[in-house]
Length: 369
Image 1 (cartoon, helix red, strand yellow):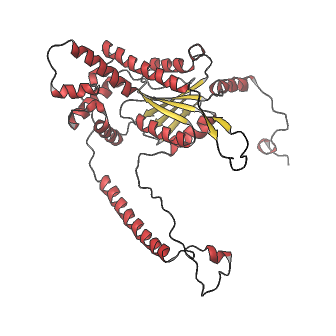
Image 2 (image 1 turned 90 degrees about the horizontal axis):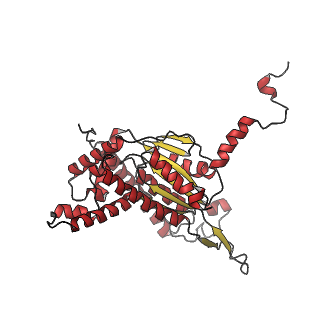
């Protein structure tokens, strides 16, 4: 009986078709060899963008890349502080102490993020432009490191010079298609970049888990300078108002000609579009593996070793010599026993903290009317 279609396969030589060439051309455009890369974050406030930025930076540096985060919020607070200082200098009356405290750190309330506020929009663009200039300046630094890996072998040889990839993370809401197109143009335009080939991809954080949002909001208001001088309730209300202002103009990424990754509820689900090469091999797996949980990590050296005792005779075999615990001396054995007790104690304490945390109530998240 002849083999059917699925078993016999094909003996024809593979041919390149117009459809394949079209698809490969799109991939080629998005995977040009470049030592410079920009990861542009996208998302509403309180969606974990800065958390993602810090995680990416730590991971990429650990892999040997040069990586820096450029948080537009820092530049925005500086721009706002300078603007307020200039405005206050023209006034005769002195502001109250609370206003002075907030103005000193460039804190911005929700009205600053209103799309109908032209002056605030101008200041926000000024901050984004300042962050962009600093980021591109950092990307263009030519920096190499010497490889000492083989010094012990090639003592007289010239040390190899390694050009590390430089990856910049543009940390901002980047909430509209117009703003993202601006980022893309500034980073990749041949005219503006003058032959300095730079890749650009977007990472959008989408979060609709109400409990997770509430926790993110509380963490944000407790740590962000924007809420300095406010009570927690005032800060939460202001943050919700800010989110509402952003939601009025927010546009999710839907341009499938761009390279982007969407993260839902901090990596419970990922959507990946036109991500190839090192980004597919490095960034995607790392984003999939992270979570927002915290746990203790203990680094422990081995216990003190001593000469093994086998009734005065030498070990009879390598398996005996290397058996776990055989080569620990009296102090090492004592350390081993105490370590076991310590880890059990810490484990029980961690389990209790986890159980207590699960019982904590979550305040209801609601939009203001």
